[in-house]
Image (cartoon, rainbow, N blue to C red):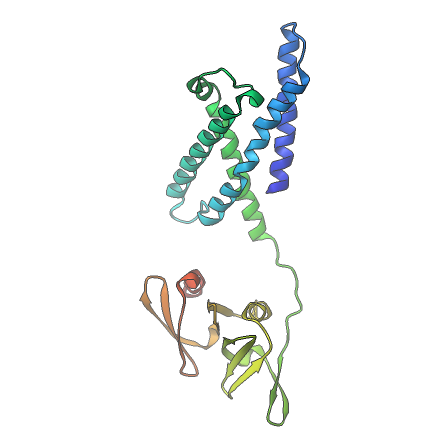
Length: 250
């Protein structure tokens, strides 16, 4: 989103400066290029200050699902607040922006609709960028066909389908299978990447489970679940991972 927003603001700053110059030239006055370009740059590039907030809101509350009218209204309200903040900053740097000496109410009356339209445009851009990233095919990775673990006689190869669940053990991960438990040197984040696209789900910062080995899921609180696994284990999920379990349950 940053490159598109930066390019757009640059183009609009140039167009606005050109339009302002043409208006001044039509009135027969000399064009103050330095102050004109500086004022338009301050005006348009200040929109980039709001890109992080807009991106955060888009990821946090995308306009989708059955609640889209409520989410759309929330985004409109947020965009209006950001536009007001933008106008306040615009007014605060009056000498640079060209708003010096003008009453704040007059500045709002003349320019608030334009500022709101620009913030709303950035919000739309953020949604389009998010949708495009969700639709983009994942980068191909060479997923392991098996994990090599040491046992009493040497080494054994464990295929992902054999893993019922895994938990963190410091700098290691412990794989639980029907035949026993095995340690491999891996972080949980690295193990999660290794098991992607294999129907495994992270339910806790310490636990990853094989969805095909889940016998039952009980809701035990707001956003928390107890998972009963094929080997008799019972694992409690963390609230921060509830969205993954919700997708699993459909």
